[in-house]
Length: 395
Image (cartoon, rainbow, N blue to C red; front, side, top):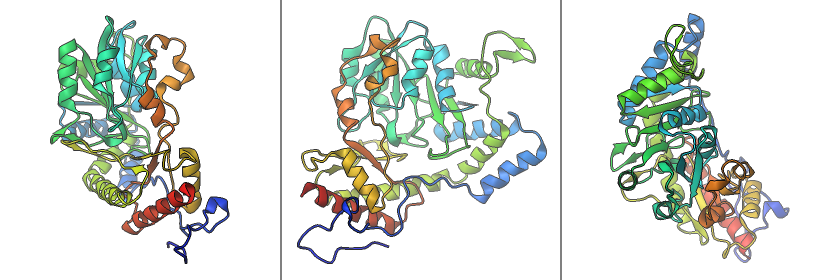
């Protein structure tokens, strides 16, 4: 239910200032839903007693690889483990790796864990993805690789990244933790670059509870990843290298297989919600919807909106506080650029560079609900709440 003002002479009082909230029933920012088929799949594994990595993991890997356009998929414990597994054979200690300043921390922190230095690259002001012009300026004699995040579900320009990497002799590791089944020019992301990593955390577009995946078209790399995720073991109790226990359980994989059956439908609904939100935002001054580059098919893990401080001088934090008070769930991804994180002032300080766009995004971006559970009526309610808050804070 949406309550509307009874006057057009002045904006209704904001709920944050003591006015009546616009929405009687709040719209949640995230909605984690397991269907009965997911639960049944997990219970069947639990009843079998065969819980460890087994045939369900193998099935999940095979189907995920095929659906993302990759030759191989290697399941693991979570998305951060996926990054660590991908970096280990592709990056050496002491290497410099070009890394987006606007991304989740794991993209960079796992480089530091590897003993490499993330050299931070600014964000493109339109797409918020890694800016290749700035990447050109960031290259050093020790640069060996580039890490690229498909942020918020928006795929990076695969062709441009590949040309850049080829020119400079760099390996490419893509972080697709937020971009399940996004495409670039009709091409799945899973077979691009040297490796692509995914996360199945509960709030991602699909979930296994916890879990991760590395996809690649490189047969040798896939074999190496499978050894690394299981204590460097090439056969029972024969450890030819030092590895990790990063295996996925069959319980998690069974949930993943079940979710693959409907991920197309869920992704299509995210795109529908995003399209409706974009139509609503077109009527509201001061709010910029996500840019979708030509050739990109966005997966909309997040619907990131940029607030113009010239229109709403109260600022982003006050804006989202007011929006939440009206009944709209809001997320901030992220409140700091990676260059502003204290943990990178020590071992990674060598890679710190000015990244003014990323640092500005940290105070201007917020994310609206875009999950498949958002109904058309709720999109209209979100639009009405945005209009109310912009009017209230701009006046």
